[in-house]
Length: 320
Image 1 (spheres, rainbow, N blue to C red):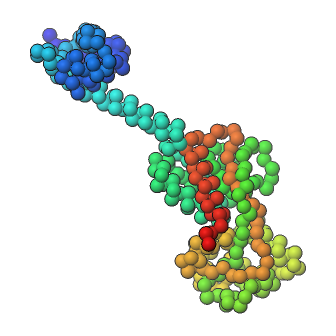
Image 2: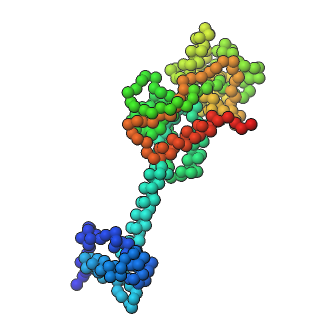
Image 3: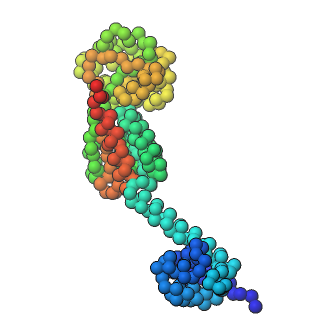
């Protein structure tokens, strides 16, 4: 007569336990019942009863005795092989859960304004990719107001940007990092270079490519001109595209406004130059923001720590 098939939930009907899996796995390493039992700290009679009960419940012969050796049947070989796999998977689960708890694995989304955060962000990414390769990082950029909405909606875990202009009831943790120093950028051979610091009045006479009206950098530039009773430049191209801005200033006499860290990255490779100016050009400070309503995951806490470390090292004075 054909052997009855096991049903979909045979392991429940057979009362399959973790101890069964451990004993079956032990048979893959030991040839005798006594050695397998001793490896698990069990008495031989208890191990023998455990296997016998399992065979009775499954109605399948799993082992046969040859002297003192336990020889698996075909069914025993299948069950033993899968018992080993299941225990290995449980061990991988343990390792992964520990990594999750320790902040060594997970997904972290960061929203960052362009400009002042670039250098710290790049330094953090370099360390994270080296020391925490199992943390999946997503970087999203945009203006502070848009990023703050992403933070409130739960689309990002960490925000690097400025506080909202309009106070928000959304509870957040804010740690101020620094004011953003702005620079006036041009092509490397611009006529204004090499003649000492440039005045605000002289800058107003040149063509410009600037971010759209209402952007913080453009608004601050216009405020400086108005404070000195100077006219606003008449030749302005508005663009939020960094690639368009870079292409335009390298091919014309136009000037633009950039965050100092972003300008340094480009000037270091000779694409642009920062004009010396005789006035202070800063905008509102920026900082680190996280939600108070959603506790940070261990992975997010790891990335926060790396970000703060990168920012601290960036602000530290260079060794003499």
